[in-house]
Amino acid sequence: MKVIKSIDSIYPTELIFNLNRLDEKLLPNSEVEINVGITVKEFEHDDQGNFRAIVSFLLRVADEEEDLFKLSHRIEFTSSDENFNIKDRECNFALFEIVEPYIRYRFNELFSQTKFSSLEIPYRFWETIDDSSEI
Image (cartoon, rainbow, N blue to C red; front, side, top):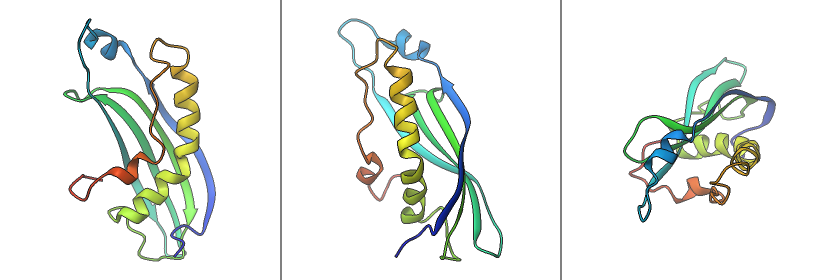
């Protein structure tokens, strides 16, 4: 079943690009674990099947709360599923799949200008999240 019927608009709402924390953590012969995540916030809907949400992609050093990279998009869309719920994995991942090409483009554009240019986001990484992971 198609979860999202149509996309009315997508536009960026927030960009954080701060590699200073990562640079500080990098020492010769050391490893730094970077966490990749997605969040969906400010989820709203009306009774005509119109929905709005902010979908964010995040990169953080594993033991810290500060974002190295965050890109958020507001998505306005319609769904034939009147019970569309962002706590449902299928719904959550459908939203991220919409913004993923925009995120990948901006990520590659920004990181290509740095010494971290070889850093890549695995395609469809969200499919590797197990059932115990928090959405």
